[in-house]
Length: 229
Image (tube, rainbow, N blue to C red; front, side, top):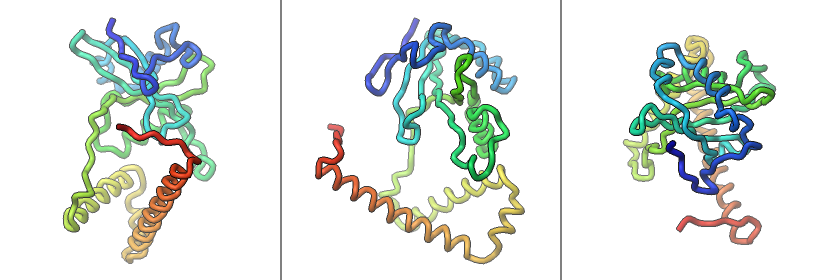
């Protein structure tokens, strides 16, 4: 059976202690994940069988949570890699109240489906093995991410890019909130625009201060850092 190659410390196979579902082949979790998929997606998903799962170290936003990659196969030449990410309670819960969803993975998935015009067809959620309080959401793994190289933008291109980002963000808020109420709150003045602009400048300044403090700490030996060669 095909397996995902280890590449420690970034990619490695978990122990039974790290994933109690290991002995059962993650059967319970995958059954719950399948039920979270839309009915018309379950048919193509059922063509695939579980092959392997590894732990994958990802970005700083996921520090302290479980992240994994699983390989499922329909045929030897028809693989899909799914990313499994642990979902914690929202940081807004103390202020906005608890989520209406019992599973935090479901909360994340519901939010993505609501805000995005077209989300991943294999986006779903599940809970850890019996007795586990860990919640997860699943999506297809795509390492080939692209991003705009803004360092090479001139003023005109940067303004166009900013308008596109603002449009996408506004559309997401309009889909997930009350568009008329949001528009009424913002009004016709430039107060909101000015506040966002001021916040953006202060945030950029804070990033620069944080980076200078980080570089200084490395130079003084208070933080150990290794550079890629």
